[in-house]
Image (cartoon, rainbow, N blue to C red):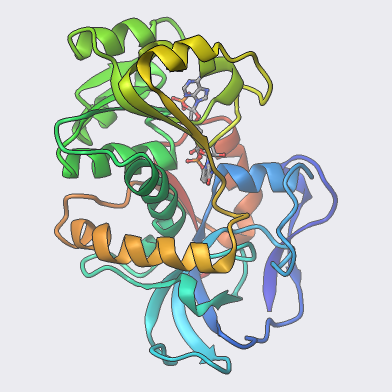
Length: 325
Ligand SMILES: NC(=O)c1ccc[n+]([C@@H]2O[C@H](COP(=O)([O-])OP(=O)(O)OC[C@H]3O[C@@H](n4cnc5c(N)ncnc54)[C@H](OP(=O)(O)O)[C@@H]3O)[C@@H](O)[C@H]2O)c1
């Protein structure tokens, strides 16, 4: 089969469409004939040599896919060849075939085209795990989403609105109209507006009950200033660095909680638990149309380098798909 390989750590041009050995599904695994994968920011880091795949994962990039079950390994029940599925992967989605743990496989939601379902597993699992499962966002609360135009952001805005929350989001100005269409009440241009002041103004001075943060160090102090009493700050990205000072008094005064989690490194049982939660609580919202895939464009998988250039420059809104045919 063919897969996108990384010839050496570097820029987009190190991605090659190469012949590689076929994967063989092990115990508890399902072999998927891939129709599409999607680009995640983590793939760019992996390509640059800064984010190695976890032990046992294929060396090719690709944290999610959609396709058709081609075979099932030993000890798999409830999945059969021919079924249309999408899956959360530890890697290897940029390929014609991939093996996935059965606990990380989801049905394609009714009403979503098979290839388009490749845009969902990584964002649905990350956003549900952080915003719903961990931070416990409730109807009537306010969620501040940083990077609202990202794959993660476009999903988080819709999910929060579907759950009855109000959304404030940061993004470059050119993406604001689309984010308001997705349901964001307030959009802030992070390049020349103060998101703390905007969040306070939007909440009558209270602040955001939950913040989904992709910046890390560079936003920590301002995130704490924007957090409401009993607020929860869920850090999932470190685009603004990993080390900074933390003023504990700012947390103590408002009883704030900070979490930082990565999905890819979680043990399989935890990923399966998250996938189950997504299937039960998020898939019905996708099937009702309340939450929809936001797909910027679809490129042939051999053109993965071009897809990476687009995502690196942040020219996209939502997800960039890589399709095999
Ligand atoms: N921990 C986990 O489990 C997990 C899982 C998945 C993703 N993530 C993280 O979530 C983030 C989004 O992932 P993705 O694949 O959806 O990425 P993406 O589509 O490539 O989006 C990256 C976003 O970062 C935004 N951004 C850059 N600088 C910013 C700033 N100063 N303030 C606010 N936003 C800024 C960009 O906004 P503009 O385009 O508007 O400039 C862009 O929308 C990444 O950091 C990724 O590593 C974490």
